[in-house]
Amino acid sequence: MNHPAPGQRPRTIIDKIWDAHLVRAESEDAPAILYIDLHLLHEVTSPQAFAELRARGLRVRRPDRTLVTLDHSTPTLPAGADGRPPFANPAAAEQVAALERHCAEFGLELHGFGSGTRGVVHVMGPELGATQPGMTIVCGDSHTATHGAFGALAFGIGTTEVGHVLATQCLLQRRPRTMAVTVDGRLRPGVTAKDLILHIIGVLGVDGGTGHVIEYRGEAVRALSMEQRMTLCNMSIEAGARAGLVAPDETTVEWLRGRPRVPAGADFERAAKDWLAWASDPGARYDREVRIDAARVEPTITWGTNPGQVMAVDACVPEPASDAQARRALDYMGFRCGRPALGSRVDVVFIGSCTNGRLSDLREAAALLRGRRIAPHVRMLVVPGSEQVKRAAEAEGLDRVFTAAGAEWREPGCSMCIAMNGDQVAPGQLAVSTSNRNFEGRQGPGARTVLASPATAAACAVAGVIADPRSIPILEEQAA
Image (tube, rainbow, N blue to C red; front, side):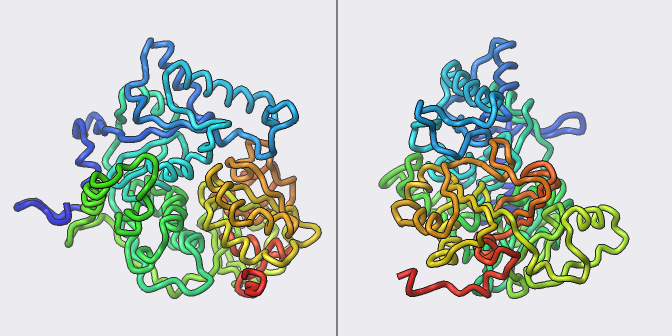
């Protein structure tokens, strides 16, 4: 797969995965039929799909290629004295109960309450080793591109498509265009993968990737850990892209080694050899290529109401020219052109989500909080991305760092990212969030959201205002 066959044009990894899963090529009249290796489900976008299966008398085509969890509507407060999760409302409780019934009826593997493996769908899937290079992966969720970090073609689908995949294990799709985003050089100390993807979205714009799948390349990308690559790929949709991926390498292989759903022993070594063959050919042509200088990336935050409205944390809020939408965003957020965002009061800090709810993210935030207290007026929620992350963080004592600082240590779930489970920002409050969307009201009616890295979010919690994480030194003696 590393070199084209004689007479064949060089292909990108995107083209190779597409071609390997093509059941029927597209025509002018019909999309292609693409085989799906892994279908991930959660409680919010699946009820109608199961109702359609039931109405048509259909079964799930490949239960063994279907993985289910509970995350969006699940409370992050612990169960009550009666052992029941404290759902925010009856609708949330019914969503969860319905998925539990559907899994029992259709014979699907549910990673639910009490399983020890429940988590945000894009955190727990990779943890289990279910996500592997060269796969096609879909989920009824916008941020399915997270799995592209492993060299998989992974993208979100709608509820109708969820039903289609359940029934056929295939999907109707038009072939995407290809884009290479090459990040030259190395990120500077204090600059994270979250800063990098926010910077990239700022360069591309929220519609710059429309119709494309992005391959992230270059020295800076290769230097990222798997957790950091997941953060990078997770937000591809925020640039309008269909998906984003990173070609697998030894970092990928070692991260997958020993996971429950990957082969073991000699079978693993054979699988690893196959995984590493998923790479773009030398000379492969992309429909668009973009280059980013890693040295120019700073700790980055959003100033507006979409993830493309970004700035370096220590910069001044830009002038939106004649863009009425940008002016509306400034009015909503309460920032002023030509003035720094630094020093603006912060009411809430959220650390978690499928973007930044992994163990390395929690370590990043804890490093700044260790030995300190958050500002008295700040409410801070720290929500691990899965039960596995929660156990590992507690084994390292990270939960004690957060609670000693005055933060709330919660149960796993999507939480304040989408605010479906009762974890909300009050109207008018400003939240610094490690999640992926800052639309008006995303974290609650009237809530104002600034997207940032875990380090920046932690710095803001300590300062009580928007702050540069580079201005708050890590207390080495406390860390020891």
